[in-house]
Image 1 (tube, rainbow, N blue to C red):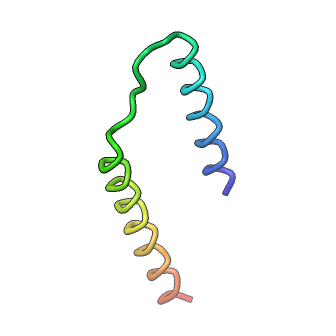
Image 2: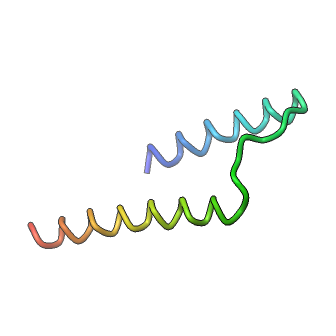
Image 3: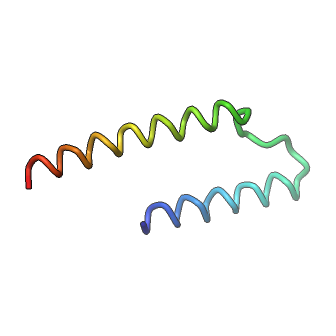
Amino acid sequence: MKDFILSLVAGWIVGVLFGWLKLPLPAPPLMGFVGALGILFGAWSIEQFRHFLLH
């Protein structure tokens, strides 16, 4: 959970800086973002499944 919060704060800081400097955001379109979340969820699911099998 700590890594998630640190990533979120770091992303927020980058967003604030880019907004303040009026630069285009370095973010993918919404569908790319949703796809990346799907990949992360899939990898997390496998790790949870492995943990469940080993314990």
